[in-house]
Image (cartoon, rainbow, N blue to C red; front, top):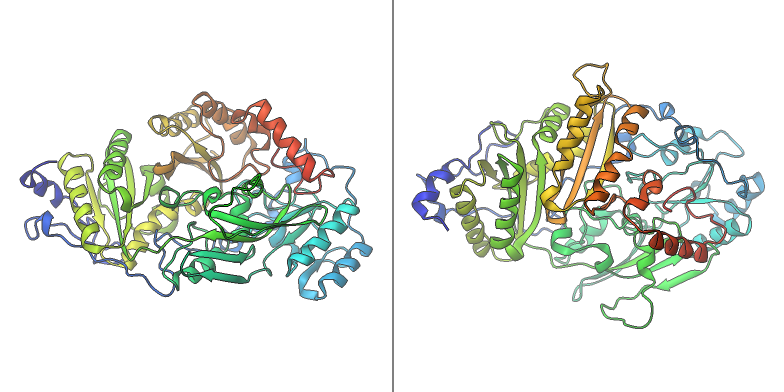
Length: 566
């Protein structure tokens, strides 16, 4: 630990360099006016409505909020993947099938019928993914409101060999949430009831169609927090979150879905209702079958209800945004954050210079720091004792500034500034596709080698003539950001347009690169259609064979979300 005399000059640099950044009240750490050991930060208090404890943007990432690129211009997935052929076993939907579904659901609003009439406009939002990359050809969308209705739908479809595509909020990034051909879309948006919440244990039981933001708001009323936070929390559904084993921003603190889900209810392809909606943290009686559905991407059944453990919400929150001069410094800062912030560290996010430049260019928002730095990190702490947390944060700041690990930075003073700082991280995803399109790679890589992939990818496109400053070049830039705490890199190739030459240049090279370093080709986004053919880079032949056996056991007719996953 450096002496306070050494730390004070360094802490003078921890300031708001750009006073015009959103709000003028960021903490300006002027050591001459207030010594580092006297600094106390204001904290976001727990609210009845959920103040995001990781404070991430809850912007609705629905397709209509994305760049103005009409869905009619999206190339059908079947054309983009000409090697994919419709399974001849599957029956096409007929008027008789639609009649059955209408009688079952009993409401005109519960079905979109494109068989008996032209419903192309109504079907568009269910056929196209929000990235504007994948587009299916479904003619029927079903919106059940109960598990029993889902069961009857599935039994009918299985008996008649009608392929189905389960769908939640349709915010996925790998083409798993939209059909490839004419699969029937079963959308769970009407199954949106919260059934119970135990204020003592923090256990929430809810339908799969509940919006993540609504689940978090409900938990917040009792001082708890939903253990998942995503930029798409305003539109994604918790059933889809479980089906894709979503990771998000809170994993470093609260762990994954596999650990937080206590039980679930699901409907199997033959209509069987699997009732495993346990509310027990300990239940050591036989195979833990629910784990097969967490991350199963709707390939062996449709999740209809979940039981999940919600931790206590932290009333004291700090967010800091730093500039660093190298990836080595980023690793040092992360190591010190784990050591000194320990139990109150709730997020440690990495952003490179290119990602912040792209965010600024796409949104026009000013960045927190006036000078540019090769790397930036966003740190959040969440705890129950304001004085205790402030003391730990002060100690951390003194050390990383005094040791010149961190070059410059700002600390939020109020909730508005907390949200503004988080926007610099959460806004990257949308900014990446603002200028046309984006190829997203969600990868797990050992930390020492994590950013090497970004450098090599950028160099690859600089050398192959696909990246440049004019419209002649499809690639605009290569950016890297992600969750340092989870060794999870988001490698994004921002493009002016989707181009098969770009895809050929990056795949399978990127997966080969990851495999050589014993990483994973999908950290949190899943496999879907985009990564189905590349699973062998992360899983052995034995593991893939066992997965296919499980798929064959639960779904012998293969009607569940076909053409994807494995």
